Image (cartoon, rainbow, N blue to C red; front, top):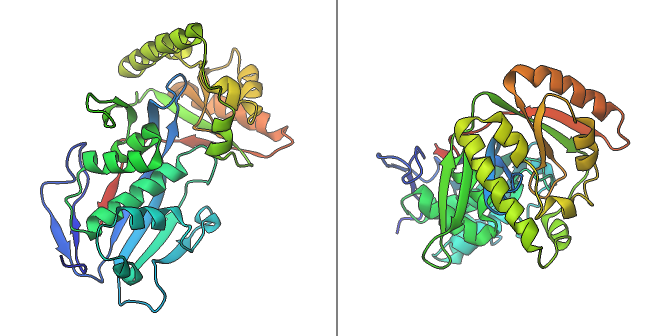
Length: 333
């Protein structure tokens, strides 16, 4: 094992990073780029997510060992400024968990985190961090960077495979338990070009643990059946770009009715957008980000409406268009 080199490839498809591998000298470093995600999309609780062009960039370098043990962490950017620089940092903890070699080598490791993804806003910041940490540890240990392997490792650590799936593979990602117990089977669809995605992001945090605490231990058989039916419509809508199916699909019985207690803007915005150009509105992850799908031709009109709505809020709400990322995880020098 040569700790001073990475095994590097670009990630071009769902199975393998790339056909050509390169080795880099220890001071060159690599950059790992991971997109944000809209998880629990509509009725797809723990099942589907959409990758978004809002990125976490992780620069990884091997340097001379430091006196202090542990990974040297540098933070860049406004969003990343909220992240810790000690051993509680999620990326550092993931690297330490996955790293199979001498823990003392971690004192030779320097990482720089530059993230556009807001923390605890429902846009997959923890999924992106977990994917980045797993990828870094695998690269350090000389492993071949296959997306399938990265997804399996990251999903087990993150605990929520849908957002992890979107972060790794890009596009509209979906996953379900495989035949082998404990394994998840990932798949993806291309998001229809005809649809735009608009976000309303309230200026407060909702942590996943608190949001999940609102969920009941069980739901009625009736509600479960409704969500299965909605999921069938959702997949058809994405595959065919079917407005009517999408409009009917984007209602949920498993998580949104409970999490909306923490994000009152969800029901308020849905009521405000009734009869508008919006095809549908959903909670992103655990919130508070709220996502509206709209035909691209009607995007500007809906953006105007959303900005008017946001101006009258007691709690500030940021309105922005989100572009879909179709590539997922990417590694470069």
